[in-house]
Image (cartoon, rainbow, N blue to C red):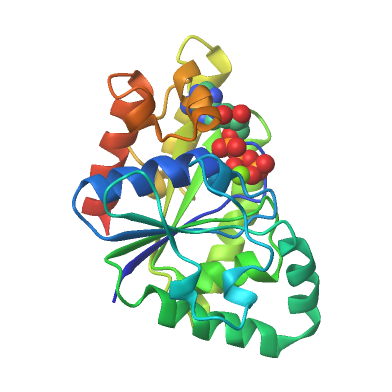
Length: 249
Ligand SMILES: Nc1ncnc2c1ncn2[C@@H]1O[C@H](COP(=O)(O)OP(=O)(O)OP(=O)(O)O)[C@@H](O)[C@H]1O
Ligand SMILES: [Mg+2]
């Protein structure tokens, strides 16, 4: 079975898409045949790699998934592009369990040939994000070190607990601190509180992703950080996180 990593946090703008693109690229560069799935109607994971969103989401379409998969510039990396209408699919899925069941089936068929799958999810905990958690073997939760991060985490851990109790494959979870600025006292405080916490402490990756302007510039060039700025601190941090994530599983 492929390793499936869902990058999730219902809080917006915490670095989910950046982490999904960068980790997918790093995992692909490690030689694994990798698929990045964009489940967000913003389609940032798709456009951030210089690709075009689709009119119907491949998981909610009738065509075989293989016809919708596109190759990214990165060797070994394929992308299942996002669709702006995904929020409508989300609303339909809330009312129609058959739709979710068929998406789940299509997901399983579509990923069978890949070594690793990364899922970029929207900033919400709707039915599709919950389904994606159930499809995954691991959830990666990016957080920004700010006061409200802790509240978000409490809710995420609850969702995870329920996902683990359900019928899914979810086995573990990891928290990664993004846009990290060690000069800020608040960053250091939150970092310490999370690492020392009984609830979150065991979940936190050692690697932190520093605030780095090249990380925010890369998507506007349609490139991952490894093509855009391979020697940047951001690229080094994501390469390190990749090793930690693959080792942790
Ligand atoms: N390490 C970093 N250094 C500097 N800027 C960053 C870094 N990581 C992410 N950003 C920037 O922060 C913004 C939010 O990041 P991103 O889009 O990855 O978050 P998100 O959680 O996917 O957002 P949403 O919830 O809207 O989907 C983007 O402009 C991105 O370029
Ligand atoms: Mg995003």
